[in-house]
Length: 170
Image (cartoon, rainbow, N blue to C red; front, side, top):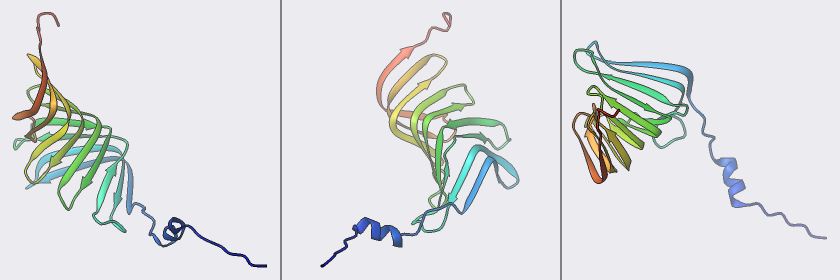
């Protein structure tokens, strides 16, 4: 009598693949970023998971949402960003936020989108997703945009609609 066993390649590879687990975990996180003793940004997150081992590039996941408050040189609030999910890549100095993203600038203008990328080096934010910007006078909708990090100088790439607001009726 002869018997033969055969294993799936994926099962064998799973035995030799290192398990991805966070090197740091935290809940109820508040991080304060300063530069030359000046407040630049405060980030609050419900949960933070940092991965540094067995990955090509270290990253931090904020799976339960985050709020970031950005401050100017005089430590006045410039902008607020909220999202339901975030990933930070420290080596690239890049942050991606997703799901129910909202940015509010010091002028009261609000950006809503589902995906946003913040480049810490260029100090720019951008998206290729649908965006809606609400000002005191209008709502502008489009696909993709780019802006400075405090959302005071922005450009929508493909405007799909503009709605004029009549403040007297609001």
